[in-house]
Amino acid sequence: MFSLTLNHHQLKLLWKFSEKKLLDIWSGAPGGETTTLDIWSGAPGGETTTLDILVAPDIKTSFKDFVTQYNISHSVAIEDYQILLNSQKVKISTRGSGSARKEFSLYEYNQYDEIVQYLREVEQSCPKIVKLLSIGKTTEKRRLWLVQISTARRGARRPFVLLEAGSHAREWIGPATALYIISRLVGEDCGATGLSKYLDWHIIPLFNPDGYEYTHTRQPSFNTTSTLANYATEAGVQIKLDWIHP
Image 1 (cartoon, rainbow, N blue to C red):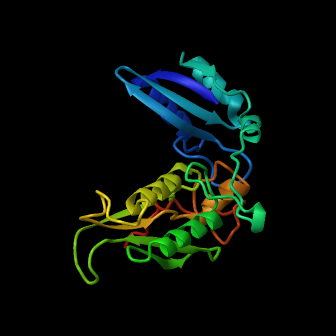
Image 2: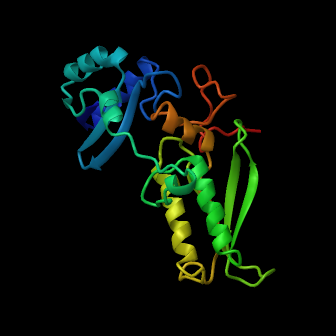
Image 3: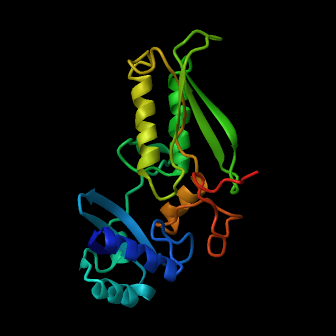
């Protein structure tokens, strides 16, 4: 991973470099073992911009030649990202049986089955205000779940908030945040909180479970949906970007 500091002109050159190499510098490769160019963070600030870019081994030499040629300030932030991934694998809470069963934690990145089990438990604990609805299935036959939270009388109509998380497979913080919001909305005693007293909430905590699971088990940089479960040769889609135009 490289850290770059660029001015506006150099940023334009970087964009042209990505087009010449037929790369998408804003997202990682959807499948396979490597990522091309992947901008992780940017800090716009006046005349210069700071970017962290993950560069695949097969273009590392040409990328270094490019930044040297155009006097782009750069440094190696992480020499081998794969080693870092291997050493910092997130510990996932497993939900076994009997004494081996661990409590669900909102402060860990949980996998699909654990998330669904937590949502069922919330519904069972607060049946008067929480309803869990299946709104469809994914390519890999996982159910998409919608959580309805309402303290209104049955049949009452009032404004609602629709919240969706987890469209981008590798962005684990989205589903984790959605689950935390659910926990705060129902509160400790399943009563009306400040945010649920006057509003209904419809929350989809994990909108791309197939891709999300793939990032946990195979490829952490994967960011799209599954296409017939053939991740190696099929790109899937970016749920927020790839719409069919009439």
